[in-house]
View 1 (cartoon, one colour):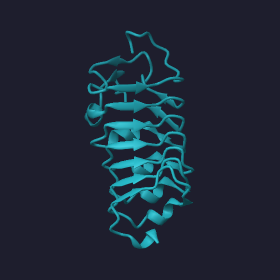
View 2 (tube, helix red, strand yellow; view 1 turned 90 degrees about the horizontal axis):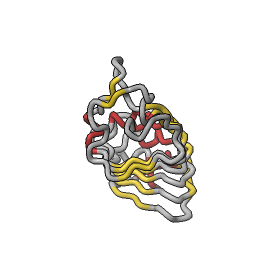
View 3 (tube, rainbow, N blue to C red; view 1 turned 45 degrees about the vertical axis):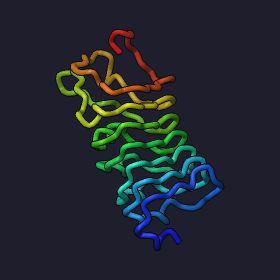
Length: 174
């Protein structure tokens, strides 16, 4: 039983026919690497709130829940595409080392932080973000097109997928 594997740090069951509830992994607080992509696993993302996960791939699984369950986690790599995960994209700003995020076709929404002066300053946490996939979400990447970018939002970006986002701005503003 996974409930008894408290020292489990690495689990890759991706692309299998495994099913069951994510809650069985709640006691695996030392888990750093969890891959359950393309499985029938269900449950709430909150079951992982106490884990030490650095790499997480639940894409194309049946897992649900709110992204805020991972608030403040030390995630480097997160794939939650094609899930029913909800929540505010602002949670990304609480992940100090994040460099790859795929939220495509999830129910995550929101906007990136814009300060009260209407200027866009990148949270220093996101300065290392290299891959950002938001296709098919309701995320406002621009924070409203009237905002001015002070710094390059993602200076290390190598891949940006935003197909299907409502972006009302010129290319130069983007």
